[in-house]
Image (cartoon, rainbow, N blue to C red; front, top):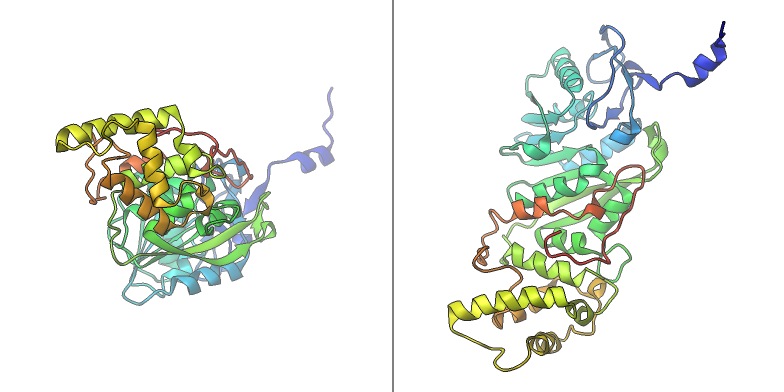
Length: 385
């Protein structure tokens, strides 16, 4: 008969946590918590309202890391600067520790969570604490309509950071600010300035629509279990004046300039695939407008002339600021060179439907998770990736 020693069972049993013992901790809403193993009962140990006795098995691969540093929650609240008339959108409320800090400050809190057990938990905590200004919606926030809100807070799985940021950017000036936690590597890309290591297409596209500032760094020890990477909280403040640029055009230019960001812009345009796409778009534009600025000049020479005239030909993509990119796009468009087929895609400056294109083409290297995966694709060019 096989005998299993008690010490072995103790050492190797699953990482089971009691949420009532995690006062001030927020569970990140991954793709779902796997198991609930005990009956619920009321408890008054949690600050801001009773919670349930829930045992869960955490799955780090799904972003289930519990924030145990209450000071970070307070910094999020301070940065959000919530007003009594505000509607706050919270993505991933978990057990409601941040939610319980939001409810006394806001007129209404609308929370999205994909895990039904977390939905039930945060509802119960708010009711037990006497709040009636919480609306909880179960489902995937990326596939949901948010409605009107003033402030957004989020503790979301880091692997959906990129599409969530793009969804927020698509709302442009419809909200006042968003305070979000990301993997530090991703946050540094959002914050990066020209010439810095992390400056990339994401940096420029974000700056096009929003001001981004650093709130605080979050060490791995602030989570249970600790991830392998640092985290960072950042604040988004949308620009009040809508950007006068066609985003499909803009992002097409960015894809070329950052395809190899340490190469010169001229070198990135010296690519047969790029030149073929641009020449086809130019022929369509020329036919529609009965103009031919290129004349008898070889198209490649024509493109290089525009780059030389802009003064950016010899500059490298990661050293060019947003105003210089605006000037470059203007020079191309003025000469009939477009980065989107003008028959298939409207080239006006109305961006209301252009962000669906961005959502479906988010860079894979930006979908990084808490375990520190970094599969950069900056060295590859694909107009439709």
